Length: 133
Image (cartoon, rainbow, N blue to C red; front, side):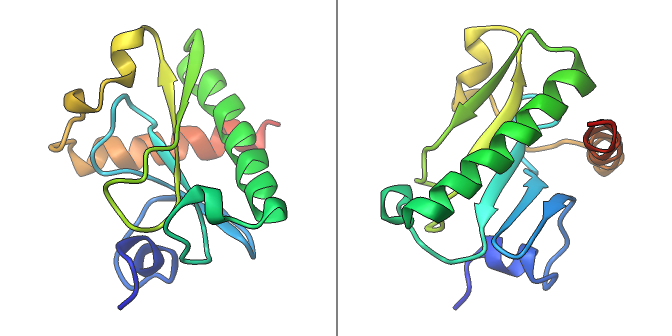
């Protein structure tokens, strides 16, 4: 069975996409650390990021870099966090999120109840920042 990320990428379940290409997709998480928290996910279902082919890992990180720059601009954050954890879903992914302090990296603080309207606004904000690049 396809992972939840593959289902989102394929449009089988809803997701708020901010980037898609033939190798990678990026979409907002429904349980963000901070507003704008985005997951950058390779289309290939590979569980552990250390198993990604080097060229795919490079592409994932290049997209993460572009998303990070857009997040920093859109949210005027002093930093952008980047975390590869991989325990939640068996499909490699990079967490990219605006950060103001070290506490923003604490996954015990995710917000599982973000109103859909805020996620819609976050998506629009990130897409606008990406278009300005």
